[in-house]
Image 1 (tube, rainbow, N blue to C red):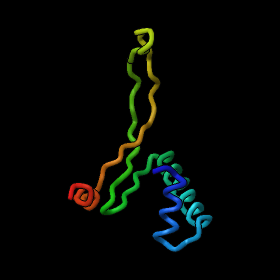
Image 2 (image 1 turned 30 degrees about the vertical axis):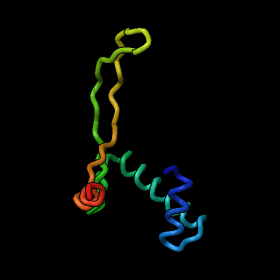
Image 3 (image 1 turned 135 degrees about the horizontal axis):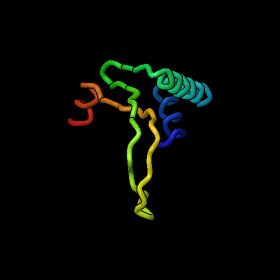
Length: 91
């Protein structure tokens, strides 16, 4: 499912028009991005949690040349599914 399909599904489920559904989705994405930038966790009970995770500098290899390359430290995001989501997808 891509963003346009998600907007259509949101509009269908909520009764919103597509423009309002797009604004709601864009606002959600903006809020999540802001919170991750602040290194804040987002927890949606039953669905899951998004947690920013720091990754340290590490040595990797360029797959094309095999040459060692140092990857700079960065922050990634970990998603941990909630109980109800796991139950729903494993029925």
